[in-house]
Structure formats: C-alpha cells, structure tokens
Length: 486
Image 1 (cartoon, rainbow, N blue to C red):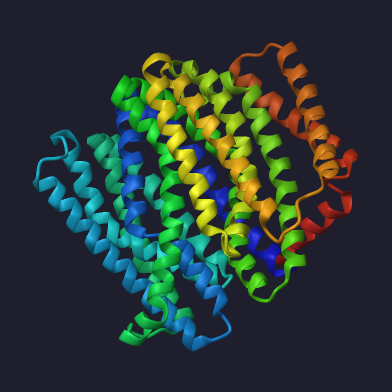
Image 2: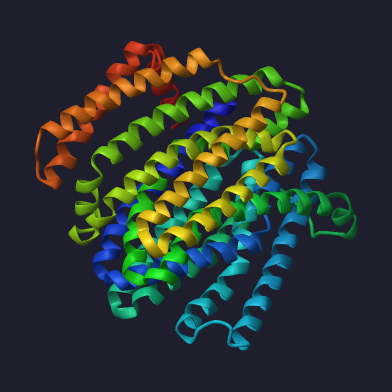
C-alpha cells in the first residue's frame, strides 16, 4: 500500500470514528439539557474554540510541516519537537495569564465566569496535546495521532454526558472537555517519548527552529482563526441579537452542515505534510496528481453526503435533534450549498500552503471572514438564523473563488474543465433522480431516514460506476488495501 493511501486511511478511520461519536453525542445531549442550555453550550463552545485556537498559535500545522521536512535528520527532528513543545507551553502560559487578568477586571459577565475558569485550566494540556499530534503527523504516523484524538473524544463525550445527566448540566460538559485534554495530553507525551527521542530544549534549538515554527504557525493562525471565526462568529452574533433559543436552532443547522466535508477534511489533513516533502523534492507532477485525486473525491463525497442531507433536511432535524428544531431546515439547506464550495477548497488549500502560498491563502480566508461579519451584522437582526446562513454561504463561495485564483497563478496544473464538467454532470444526474424519488414518496421522518439513505447510496454508486468515477477495480484495490492495513 502506498504511503499516501496509508495516511488517508488512517485519518479517514479516525475522522469517521470521531464523526460517529459526535453523531451519538449531540442527540443525547439535547435531550438531557434544555434548548436554551444547548444554545448557551453552543455560544460558550464557540468562544472556547476561538480562545484555544489563539493559544495554539498554529502549532499543529507548523509542527507537522517542519517535522516532515526534516524527517531524514534525527537530530534536527529532536530539536524541532523540543522547540515546538516548549513554544506550546509558553503560548499556554501567556493565554492563561491573559484570561485570569480578564476575569479579574470584570470584563466577562458573571454567568460566564465558571466556564472561563475551566478554559484557563484546559489550555496548557490542549496545547501539548495538539503539538504531540502534529509531531506524529509529521512522521507520517497519522494513525497514532488519530487514536489519541478518538480516545480523547470518547472520554470527553462519555464524561460530559454523565456529568450533565448527574445535574451539572453545561458546566459538566465542559468539565468532561477539560478532563479529556488533561489525560490524553499526558498519554500522548508518554507515547511520543517511547517512540522518538528528543532532549530538553536549548538556546541553539530556539535559534535554529523557534522562529521558523513561530512564523509559519503565525500565518496558519491567521487563517485558522479566520476560518474558526467564519464558523463561530455567526453563533456569537445570533446569541447577541436573538438569544439562546435561536442560537440552538442555528447550531442544529451548522453542525450537520459541517459534517458533510468529512472526506475533504481527511484530504486536507493528509496533504499538507506530504505536499511539503514533495515540494522540497521538486516533485510537481506527483502534487498535480494528488490535487486531481483530491478534487475528484471531494466532489464525490460532498455530493453523496451533502445532497442526501439537503433533500432529507426536515426529517433529519426532526429525528436527530427533535421536532422543535425543524425550523432550521431552510438554513441547513442554505449552509449545505455554501459548504460544498468550501469543502472543495479544502482539498486544494493545504497544497498551496505547503508550497509557498500560505500568506495569500490565509488572506483570502480573512477577507471571507470580514464579508461574513458584515453580512451577519446586517442580516441577522432582520432575518434571524436564515440571515446568518446567507452571510456564511456567501463568504464560503468567496473563499473558494479566491483560492482558485491563487491556484491559477501557482505552478500547479488546474484540473481540466471538461473533466470537471463531466464529473459534475453525473453528480447532478444522481441528485435529480434521488430528489425525485424522495419528494414523490411520503414517509414519516424516521422511516424516511431508514429507507432513503440506502436507496441514495445504491443510486450514487450505480451512476458513478457507470460514469467511471468509481471503477470496479478501484473498489477491489481499496478493500484489499484496507485488509492489509488492518
């Protein structure tokens, strides 16, 4: 099995397990806590995501890229790991001090303070955990990084549900979140020490690699922060303008919409460190081949999951979240449309960032964020969560177009227009037939979710087997490769 395929399968397995865990966690949680409490959880978790991302300083991407570039030099790798871990601790200390000072100056409303204290305790362990995972990715041992992440999610969701059910409600959920990082960061360090040797960081290490890690991580932070704000700022603005109930509705739309880029996110995680090494070896032809493969499977996966969720949006929200969340169906459909474009962009962006266009790509994301904020502030007061969906969708499309513009000016080949047009035609054929079937046969929501997805999958496979996008030989090879991997 090729090294790239092994990495993709490792990340896919981890991401799929994480998706299953999330799919099980959310419907149980919304039945333990009330809708306003779920809205509070969504808004606080959005704030958590922003602060923890800032504290990490882009270290995950910086570590995996730079470790991959020096993977043939054990001494250099040792220095990179030591420096990255030390920088993660420094960032965490600065972030924690900043949070404590903010609490002491009464800038945070009293009702949010208990959650913020939990965040302050979590940061240092989250930073170490992120750096350890980045190191394993850099060594192309993504399987270890994914096992750690899946283990953390299992611990988080199980302890969060137990504590929420025991009466701790939203605070209990965040206690579970903190506990998962505490235990898995320590376990991750133990696994790292047992697999790779690295010494205590010295001044020479900082001189040699500290600036490189910090600078690349800083640029990744700009884009990562912009992307996170892009996903979370609308939640915070809805909380501000419309309150907890509307926030809960919007969260019920954005969570499944983000799930459909499951496969593009796998491709994104696999491509950066590998593209960095291929670029260093001047292997542009292999990068072009990887991009075309990534775009193909990105479009296929987004069509399969996105169209299914779009067509079955109402039944899905009714069964998964509850009848009181079906009002978010129109917003969910709108977000799916935008997510399709952003998902395609995620298959190309890591290649651009690994080969010298990180500043331009992050600038595109930042501009998309500004557009999103401007549209949200304008539209949410008047149109509520649907207005937030419009702002987010427009910004997603703009980011896609911006990254295509960078791709045009890069040394890499664009995928042929006729190839893309033919691929899209077959996907449109599948969507049209599947929609006609669903909209002409009436079932109760639960029955619809049991009957139609298998029908859609069989139809999708038939159309794409006929079109040649899922060759029979490829299926046999994938099954054989998976068996060898296990």
